[in-house]
Amino acid sequence: MEKNVCLFKFFKKKKIFNIYIILLIIIDILSKFLIIKNIKLHESFYVNDYINFIYIQNYGINLGFFKKNKIIIYFLIILSIVFLIYIRFSFTNQNIQLSYNLIISGILGNLINRIYYGFVIDFINIHILDYQLPIFNFADILIFIGFIFILKKYIIF
Image 1 (cartoon, rainbow, N blue to C red):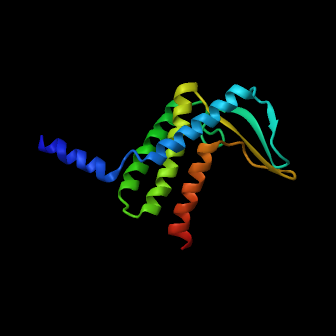
Image 2 (tube, rainbow, N blue to C red; image 1 turned 90 degrees about the vertical axis):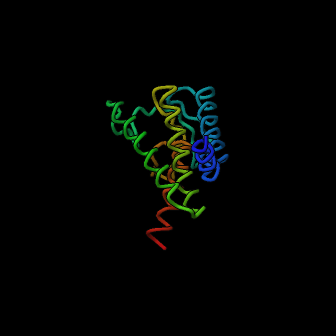
Image 3 (cartoon, rainbow, N blue to C red; image 1 turned 135 degrees about the vertical axis):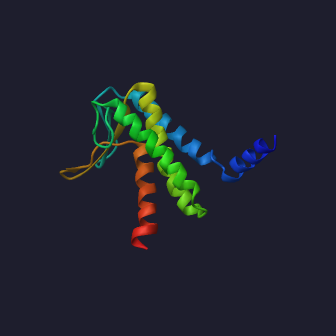
C-alpha cells in the first residue's frame, strides 16, 4: 500500500498529464479532422497570398522519409516519446519542460493520426513568391517551436 501512495505522489508532483498537452493534441486532431471533412485529397483551399490549405496524406516521417517501412516509423516514434519524456522530467525549469511538452504534444498528435488513419494529415502550405515550404500541420508547428525554444536555451544563449 505504501508503494502505491508514493507512486501516486510522484505522478501528482510531476504532473505527467499536463492539461495543455491534452489541449494541444485536441486542437491538432480537430484541425486535421476539419481538413479531411472539408477539403478533398490534393485539393487546394486559398486562404491568402501566402497560405493555402492543401490536404495531403504523409505516409512517412519528416518530409516523407521511411514511408515504405512502418516498423521503423513506429519504432522511431515510440523511442522519441520515451526519450523526450525521460528528458522532460529530468528538468525542473518550467520553460524547458514547456519546450519538451510542445514536442511531445506534436509527436503524439501525429502518432494518433498515424494509428487511426495509417498516415499523417498535412495541410498548411506556406509560399512566398516562388519559394514554397513543405506542407505541414499544427503538430509539426508544435514540434518546431519546442525545438527552437530548446535551441535558444542551450545553443544561442
